[in-house]
Amino acid sequence: MRYKPNNSISYRFLLKILPAFFLVSLIFLAALSYFELNKAKKAHNQLVQEKTDNLARLLTEPVWQLSTKLSSNILKATMDDSDITCIKLEQDSDITPLIIEGECEDLSSEEIINFTSPIIYLDLRNTSRHLGTVHLYSESTTQWSSITKQLKALAALSLTLFFTLIIITSAAFRSTIITPLSRVSESLKSYRQTGQRKPVNWDSTDELGQLINNYNRNLIEQTKTEAALKESHLKTENALLSLKEAQTNLIQSEKMASLGSLVAGIAHEINTPLGNSLTVATTVSDITRNISKDIESGTLTKSALNNFIESINEASTILERNLGTAATQIRNFKNVAVDQTSEKRRKFDVKQVIEEIIYTLNPQIKHTPFEVKVSVPPNISLDSYPGPLGQIITNCFNNTLLHGFEGKSSGLIRIKADLVNEKYLSLVISDNGNGMSPTECEKAFDPFFTTKLGCGGSGLGLNLVYNLTTTILGGTVEIKSTIDMGVTLNFKFPISAPSAQKTQGHI
Image (tube, rainbow, N blue to C red; front, side, top):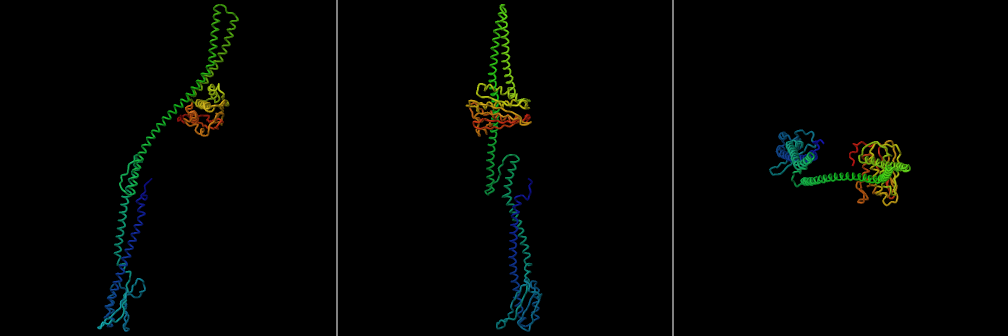
């Protein structure tokens, strides 16, 4: 953010304190002016009164002698004083007129002050006689002019004090407030630029000093905390990498275990037709040796030859049937095994792939009270990954056998698939087994969650189902269950799986 001078704390501080300083200065100047004005007014009034009294004493003799001319001259001489506006001499004698000097037309103004003094004459017997009264009028405005210079000096002094106070206050504010705050700001700016926390070098016992001390302590604590956090983060990352590696290995082991179980089942199934074929081959070998002996000895009869041919034909039929069964089983196993180990993308028929998978899984339930029913319409093609799809079905199948049908005397697994629309395939795998509680349903897809820990459960079966569904196949899966009502897994796969770039992060 761009720095603006009027946003600074100094500017705002001065903006708040200057009016107070200015108001105090004005009040100070006004108080001084009022004091000086009253002082000048009193001095002026005292001076004019003294002049009036002196004038009365000067007029005593002329008034006693009834010398109007001399009295008038004295009044005229007194009028030379600029402070005097008008002088009136009132005499008690009826034969002498009122003597007036100056501008005495308008004496009603409030600015005109009347000063009076009686004219008293003392005769030889020291008897006082009142001869009259002298009135001296003076303007009060002259008092302002007498103190103007003083007021200017006071104003200059006030302004000097005002600006001096501003400078001193600003300097004190800067050294006390701005400087430590600037150092804190530099510390924060250095942290943003370099990532290193630098303590603030400031030593004072005031509130800011305490704040900076707390800031420095927090810096030290944060530095220690960040170091510990980085170390913990590094340990966590290493632990996460180890966990992911272990999870990957466990998932791979889960895949290989499924494949191993598949191999064991297929080997057991192949053993029967191959054993029958071996028995037939041994029988053919025996009758062939017998017929060879008859030929060498010349005792071969027509009936013996016919029996030999009939036995060979019957053996061929049995061999063809048993070897065909073994070949079918090996072919289905090869398709499933190649798909699950290679995870190659290709176009495939959904019904065919699911039937091949179930065919390879049937040996696990052949001699059990459990059965599988598949309902898939023909001619549904996917451009996807048949291996992960087979792994999903295999894991769900094994999960049902391990958990769902535990303690059950019978059980049914249903696999249904159909098109939702032209873009998505719906796959539903359900059973009528033991079911799951709501809490178990919430954690069903979590890695390492199992109710059979240490009893054959790795906790990765359904987690692998979830990962394969949501990453490689680009689909979704929901689980629904009620205790003793079985489990239903609803899958939704796109007809065309997402590109490999979008699924590189899957486990």
